[in-house]
Amino acid sequence: MTRALPTIAHLDADAFFVAVEQALNPALRGKKVAVGGRERGIIASASYEARACGVHTPMPTSQALRLCPELILVSHANGMARYVEYSRKLFDLCETLTPIVERRSIDEGYMDLAPCGLATAPALTMAIRELQARIQRTLGISVSFGLASNKLTAAIASKQHKPHGLTLVPPGNESAYLAAFPIGTLPGIGKKTENLLKSNGITRIRDLANHASPAQLQSLLGSHWHDFVAMARGEDTTAVLTEHEDAKSYSQQETFPRDTADSARILRTAKGMLDALMPKIRADGKRARTLTLKVRYPGMDNATATHSLPEATDLEAPFYPHIGTLLRTAWRRARTPLRLVAIRLSGIENAAATSTQPRQLELFSEKATPPRPGDKPARQSARQRQLAAVVDAINARHGPSSLRHGHQL
Ligand SMILES: [Mg+2]
Image (cartoon, rainbow, N blue to C red):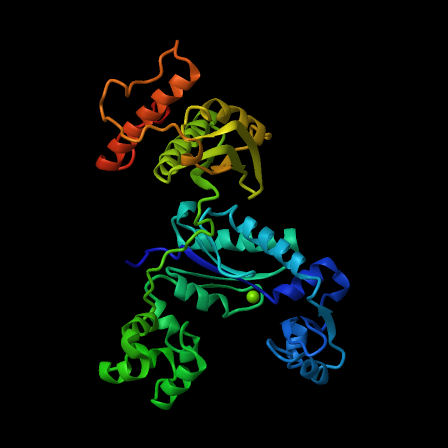
């Protein structure tokens, strides 16, 4: 499946460790700076000024200092905590644009922009440019982006116009875009394989994409040769995986087609997102304690408000009464239209640890009725849980949202 829009972004911070040191100590800006180990160490990161001098990574520090005697060397021994902190802030900023962010390393990752609801390549490009500017403004570091229809192409594109680059590969152009890159650019092709391919006339990605002899490719690349050919043709269907595989939080967001100040509509949207997330939490056997509501103004600045329940729940009902308050708290500039509303459920626990959830659910049994006004809270939530399980089961069988809560109608 090829996406019709370039919704996959790869981000790669430029000279990250050095950039963090420069952000913290502006006297280092514009200078030949490297971060690395002093004695018998290697260079971990070099400023673009130092690179112009021939310093690169990973190069022994002694060699770097010979090449560039005026090099300012910053030891990374004490810096790791700072780099981790900046990395966290960098990815947190990315998550203000989309909840689907995959952290591949301290300074590289993928984003899936599909949830942003942006319908054109220029709109996606603009959103990335705004994020890039925001990262620069907020953290004082620069990041390059590749924007494409899949991860493979986006990752190669992000390297093309460093620093502070943004390279867009229009969908359908993946193969043409990759064609002229050296064969070693493809992930999974190490130095040894690269040399083997080159000595057989395969020097560019297109030489592999258009290669006529499967037998020869099999002898050069082994049984997975067709995976490499698919990559060379710009084909990649792997999904952007969020970091929180053990589901530390569940979130959803909606960008309005047009900025809106219609509070009833915004509230309905937020409740609808809670309705969409809770069945996932139940299906995963989890409970959530904290609800965070985020709003975004047209200028891309966000505001949030958070409420934690006394104990975690896998039901919508305990959170419903708080959504309105959270919206009023977060949306302080209440007459300013909003671009986006998002909710996040965190404080995730295993339901099994505390659950009294019935194991066997009797669909359509008389127990599965809505709460009655006179019910005691414990009994009420048992009823609500049974009703929720019935709704989830119907939706699982007949497609999402076959049954909707009243505020969605
Ligand atoms: Mg980098």
